[in-house]
Image (cartoon, rainbow over all chains, first blue to last red; front, side):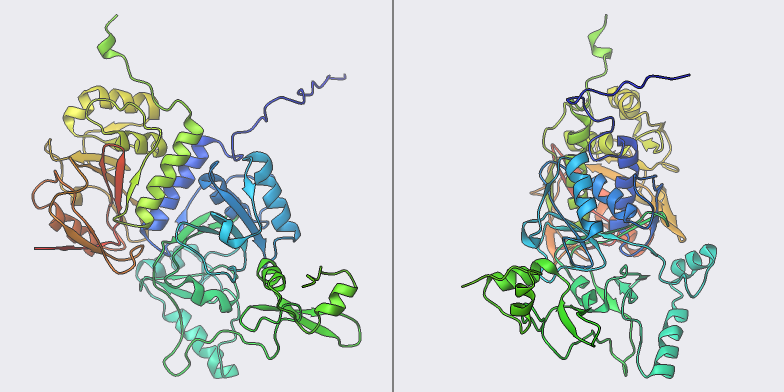
Length: 308
Length: 200
């Protein structure tokens, strides 16, 4: 039997609520967010919903953004620092479609910045909200697989196991080899996973003027860092925390103080280092900064060179 | 038909009014001591100020029992919240996710509300404290997460000994209730992380 499907008219209103989530879900997420802000670094359980994309593609961050976004907001979405990668483009388009959101690539214009694994190089301002997509919110999970146990470890601030793990790293390799998702101590109480941002970005979290919200959709956890909150990367007195550094500047914009991605350029061992934050790199190039490989990349039409 | 028994209207545009109100509450709790205003204020029922009513309408529903002091519970405020939020209205502080207290009525001490559990500190109550004004009262100095350095507030119309209760609540961190001071359409957040110092 053929059932006839009636298609909605072109001007019909979408069948979902503003910002996709229903109001009941938003209230639940909003309550979780307020408790997360009140206990910085503590992971608040929440009822993560099925989203129109697979878990692991940023459903936690999307649900947090959907619960906070309004008509006055300007949204920026980055994926590994870049505004133009698949995840960033599709999430930006999701909110353009479901929330009629104004979007931008400029860090300073955005009021909400949803990020997968980077903090923009441009300093954040008061009033901005960072939303992190978190795959594994529990920093102790690899050390203790049982949720009932890790919950007690957080409750009683028993973080010896984490220090032992860092110590064993130092004993075997001479330094802490964790380079991303480097554990931090928040407000002197909770050990928190900063999401898989490179440890280069950890110092930007400390006393940041922006509000930082973390959503883990698959693991159903929300946590937060209010502005001006102490965030200390775990270390030892004789092995202080260090961030990554590079021997060469960005190949396109010549920046020496940004986080660089290594890009393989041919099969003969050629490689270049470029800023992971695409907006930061473009802004610098527009300001006239030139890296050693900019002319080559421009000749191949990989980037547009600003002629001054 | 008795018009005085009618329940007043809630949000006229629930999606956007609740979003704006939530952002005000989020800003208040993430930057304790700053005065935030809820815009597009609704006409609150007797006994609730606009900020209290808007915050509850934004955050409460059938999952979150609300504690009200007796005279509010039996008055239009109780009926209004039951109707618009679908929330259970409790007569005892234990088990309440939200609570409204003021100095006008006899209300339980902060320690009587749910303070959370050491493994689930998020299960504590959020207490809305209705003040007569948010400025001009006895000044206290705040410090802690969300505050660069320190910040002063001076709300009026709080019960005697209130600040000692708030300081004792902050001692319980990571447990404790979170407070939202309200008056008119303005509110100030005081999460449990905020340290209170009374300035003599």
